[in-house]
Amino acid sequence: MREGFRQAMAWLHTWTGLIFGWLLFAIFLTGTMSYFKEEISHWSQPEIQRHTLDPANSLALAQRYLQSNAGSASAWFIRLPSEREPAISVGWRTPEGGRRGFMRKDLDASSGEEVQARDSRGGEFFYRFHFQLEMPHPWGRWLSTLCAFIMFLGLITGIITHKKIFKEFFTFRPGKGQRSWLDGHNAIGVLVLPFHLMISYSSLVLFMYMVMPAGILASYGGDTNRYFSDLFGRDLDVTPAGVVAPMAALPTLYAKALEQAPGAHLGTVQVQNPNDQNARVSFTRASSDDVAYRRSQTWSFDGVSGQLLSSGAPESGMMMTSFSFAGLHMGNFAGPWLRWLYFCFGLGGTAVIGTGLVMWLGKRQLKHAKRARMPAELRLVEVLNIASMSGLLLGVAAFFWSNRLLPLDVQGRGDMEVNAFLGVWALSLLHAMLRPGRRAWAEQLGLGALAFASLPLLNALTTGQGLNHSLAVGDWAMAGFDLTALAVGLFLSWTARKLLTPPKVAAKRAPRALPAGRDGVAKVEVH
Image 1 (cartoon, rainbow, N blue to C red):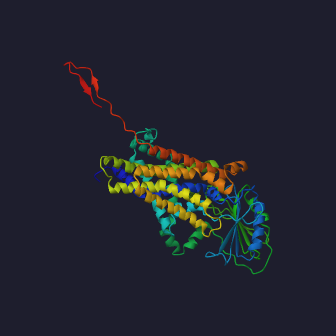
Image 2 (tube, helix red, strand yellow):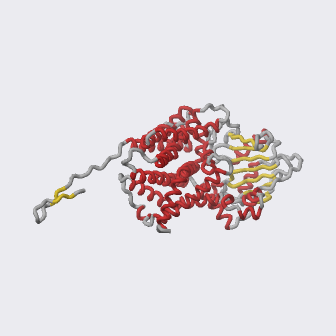
Image 3 (cartoon, rainbow, N blue to C red):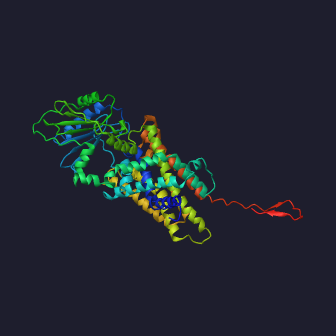
């Protein structure tokens, strides 16, 4: 190649970053929000109250509810409350359960009564969006996996391109236009480089069955269900005996499971063939207990006699490596402080993508600064930059506003929240097309600042669970959401104000006379 290797890598870094940057920004931002998926869901369903955790009592309440409402179901599913999820989640298989034959209810962790919470996809929407992009299966996953590969490629080419990248990490020159954007891009990129390498590579590992399916097809043919059964160790269906038998108390079996792993947190319980002679009860360890997802962390009991039947098998080193990458990517094991670190590093990745898009456009705009009109291709990039960044933030704010303003009993309420997100995002694109670039940025960011900063007030007025209430009762998930929304609003307000301030043009200094030379003629120094 005529240009050097580093120049070729710079070209690849620049153009792949531009073409996929708009989508990568959305994937990174929503993925970052997913680290607080449960907290967002709690804010989105304020009817579900927090109570002191008592797993044994929660199991007793869940069993009583299921016995009364789903005694003839073929299977029960129970998700115990945790520090992040306040409700007892119960489900069962039934022909009346709709397309998938499954019913799900949330129970109050103190009384065991069914909670009539508003329909909302909450944090689950942002989690699903960041790898499915609200597209039909499997196209969204294919596209997000391609973007993950592009991100990984961008990181490698960025390292190659910036040979002095670690030296540049300690250099930041504010107020220098493009130079400041590049300094910020480099500094943030180096600071969170290990995290971003892990995130992008582990996302490829998560969807390896889609990226490299040849081995799976060769071993399993078209039976992908058998592959996933072997991979995740799904329980085999137990044929019911057809003989009615009383179930053992689930709290008793819970105590027996804890004897196998003292100090463990058991997250989910599955009951096959409840109230049958062949009933089976399986306890699975919570994903927050370990970095890796280990199939062996399941204990199965006879649902009638309470006898321990199996406790899983040890994992191979290869499987533990794979599950560890998956665990590192999702961060379920992280405590509050580490989760906030994940969140900040995720925001750093989002900022790296955003600054890259701004730099690409700014560098080329300088070449056409004296022209009356910007070239059409640059105007297109400018519009997409505005809509993909400030417009996306407006869409997120619209999702939360609709959660508080839509009637509680309206049908399809959760889908209406998603439509609000997508609709406002689309409107931001139209607005960016109609307004000058700098004004469009400032107006959208200003509106986003107002929307986010007023969310705590909206929450207090519509639910009575504002900051004064959540801080008093120690509901840190609700309070943390409101405080974060307020901080985002203040940051967007500061950014909008900076954009509304006309850029300062450096004044040229007057020529300075130098001392006369030997010929007696004074010389002028030109700046």
